Amino acid sequence: MNAEIFNTQINLSGFIIGLFVFIVIIFARRLCIWGEYHFTKKFWIVFFTIGIIAVSLSLFIPENLFSAAISAFGFIFLWGIHETIEQEERVKKGWFKKKSKKV
Image (cartoon, rainbow, N blue to C red; front, side):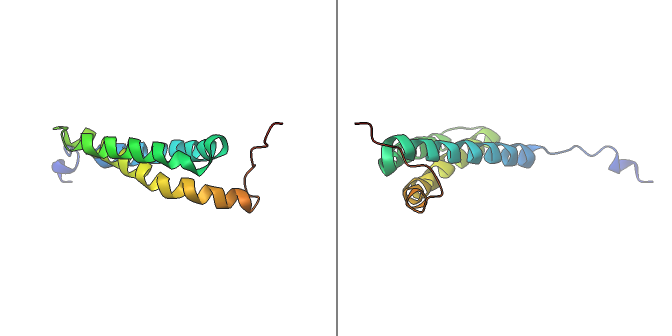
């Protein structure tokens, strides 16, 4: 057998970013549902602000793994703008609860 196979170093960067993106997508989806429920689709402004800040910050981070993770975080939140607006339609279709107005 070739001894080089056993001396190969594993590169976990892709796995770490993939796991991070998976977790952030779950978190952002829950935040989208919660935000639309409590604040209507105007909650997209929060997603826009977080997304722009994160993507902008990623441009100044010298560490590649951390920069890529922050950039992915930002772009997920920018995509959340669309999801927050679409969430209003899902509520109208009855897929999610509508907040009742207290009298």
